[in-house]
Image (cartoon, rainbow, N blue to C red; front, side):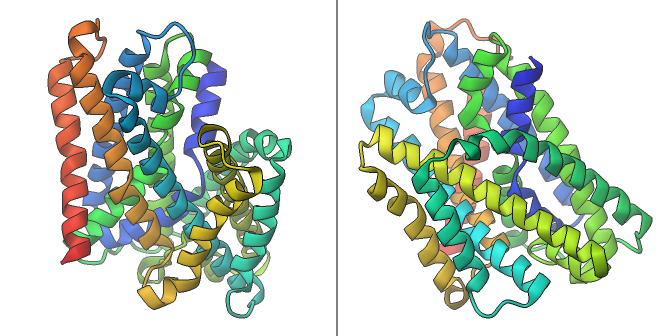
Length: 365
């Protein structure tokens, strides 16, 4: 089971955590409660997926699992939600890499983002096994580094001030937290590695990640206050300066780089193996839309945190709603382990539907 927990944590913890300090500053103390609410409903969704997997005798991925229950068309709904959330992540990573490199060496214009685009795009095209091999150790390093930063922040803790939150701030924080904790797409792999104990593994990894995230976000705001930046580590690098600035910046760029590669490779495989696109077309389909978002982000007023929030608010809830619907439909044929399964399915769907509905309203009006 340790291997399954390691996989879950390495997949969950990524560059998305870097946007949480600013989101927490905008949200205030209520953000901590929201973090636990998001974790709670993600765990419920994981329970439902685990129940659905009990019917399968062979390994199966979630899109295929959904299509068996709801029909082939629903498989593409799942694909679209995953793909568009990945586009948001890749665009945010281009922005974050550009901002952090600029903070380190004052690069001109969009140079930092273009460096990540070309190097990352080339490696995604190559499909190098190095990308998969470095994920787990770098996730372990990221955990260690975030703990180190949290303790260093505690030693320099000055005050804890919040901005007065608005509805848009609450949505941004909820979306960012959902994005940062989201790991439902790998439940089948976790289930296989843990011999059917996916719910337990996912619960442990989600709660560990949540405490780590909130500790990092809380202490960062305690050091930076109103100077908290959209990319949390950029503000810390500028605040601490000297060798700390170099270490923080290099590590942040490494986290953004490896997250870009990991998500890009997974997305390229969807296009290449599931949609049967040629390798080059698959790679271009992965990297060009995020580049467009990155290049026009200033003109449309989107920053690192905005994009992560939108990715979490608008795409991932649809994925989770689809899970709840499939679970409800097949529930009479299941022997569910999820407590109060019908209530769980309804409440989960309502939570994600509310988040999606408010986000769409806020976006349009």
